[in-house]
Length: 230
Image (spheres, rainbow, N blue to C red):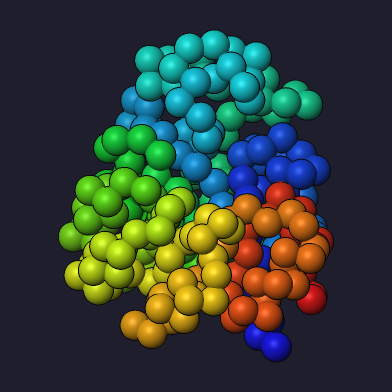
């Protein structure tokens, strides 16, 4: 049976506050192959946080895009952790795991590409250690136009035919599918043109077994220990 690639969803977010450096370090300690984080652009910096609003994951309030960088960096993101920048996540991972960067907001593509290029050029990372994913097709188009070497992941949360057209047109590497649509037919169709199939977010061991038997390539999970060394 195919060995699964483990993506730590927002870091090991079942153990530590999501999208924090503590979650990144915990994921690596548990043996995750990849760290998945979410980013918004604020004042020319990529800030690692999932929601548009600050209220759920921090002690702040309001929209991420309306906040100053100084305010964002002053907040508690759980257990005394702060909201990191993507640069800090890269530094924390330090090539011990790949990084899947999910573009959440506008104007994130060019900043992500520039940072990845810097780490490939100056920090001995390789393009194969990065995936840039998003629901936002326009941002993914920008990534592909700016740098054809960066792997693109297409996020989908409902059955859609046109993702395959987009995948071919922009030479996508993978499709990241919600667990509810990851059936045998979907997986087979995605594999036909050579796409990797990574499924999110799976925290049930029985579901992990089912997906592994269907031939998925990897799993996003809040608990990396459920996937590692299966």
